[in-house]
Image (cartoon, rainbow, N blue to C red; front, side, top):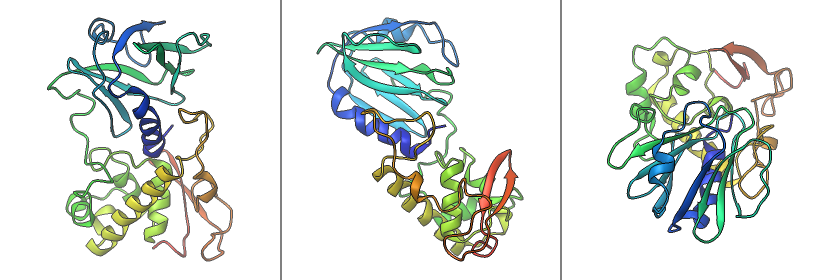
Length: 270
C-alpha cells in the first residue's frame, strides 16, 4: 500500500495543476470503490474552485468552499491530470473534469481506495481520531514517551498505531527503528525518553528523505507524472530478511509483528 511519502509525492505533483482551478463536472463510472461514493460528490463539486489540496495521514483532500473530496489510493490507486479527451482505460473509475479542459482521473484496479465527502467546517469520521503528523513540530520524543507509558505492545506496533502518529507504515517503521537502534519487539512502555527522541528524529529524517526521493517503489505505485519512487534501493532492513546487515554484517532477523513482516538486526537494534 502506498505510504505517507507516496501520498505526499502525489499531493505535490497534483497541486500546481489543481489549485485555483474550477471543477466543471464529475463522472462516476461505478457507484462505489471501497465504500459507496456519496451523492455530494456529483451534486456539490461541479462549479466549485479547488482552494487547496491537502494530505492528512494517507488521505488527500480537495478543498472547496462547499466541502472537501476525500480520496485514498488504497492498494493500487493512482491520480493523474490528463487531457480531457484521454481514452478511458480499464479501472478508470472517476473523472473530475476542470474548466480548462483537463481532468483528474482516479484509476483503482483493486478498488480498495475511496472517494468520500467532508462538508465544510466538519471533520470526516475517518480523520477524527488520528494522531499528529510525523513531520509536525508537536511530534517528538517527549510526545512518544508520554503516550507509551504502560503500554506492553511491541514498539513497532505502537509506532504504526494511527491514533499515536499517522502515516508511519510498515516500511518506514522498520527503517526508523533501525536508524534509532531499537529492537522492534521491545515493549513500548520500556523504551526511555532519550531513545524515543532518537526514534522521533529518525522518523522525520527517513520520511523527509523518502518524500524528497519520490517515495518507495511498490509494485503498483507510480507518481502522478508516471515516474516511480526511488527510495527502495536505499532500504536497510525492510524486505531484506536473511541478508546481511549493511551496518554490522550479521544476518538480519525476521518475525511477524501484528501480522506484518518485520526485519531487524539483532546486533544493531537493542
